[in-house]
Image (tube, rainbow, N blue to C red):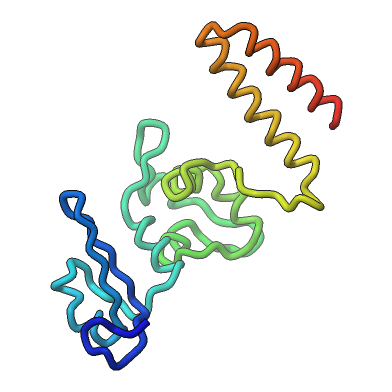
Length: 172
């Protein structure tokens, strides 16, 4: 696909704007996107990186347990393994090692909830290696269905789901 503006270079920037339920798509090359970025309503930054995104999210105050986690609450946090401080993490946007997750755990929870919507991974599991994980996920989904059926007072459906949960638990 070629740039819609110059028609000389491949389109690498794809912009979709939806205003009043009207969808407008633009496919531009980097040069044209940079030139028209202010017209498009955003600033085009060539050096985009995931750590910069996280650092930008962390520069805002994070709400936690009804309060705010700012510099004062996290100032003393330091990873025991690599020595990274939480303020360094806020600037860089990358953790230093796997132990940082344990050291900064309570302070990372609001960020993870904000980015992913949850602090527990609920993604896909490979079929050949994730058999037990898949069954546990199915049981969790069935339990949610069971709660919904009980709240609707659909007791026959709830009994069927309960029996299905017991059968799945026997598989484990």
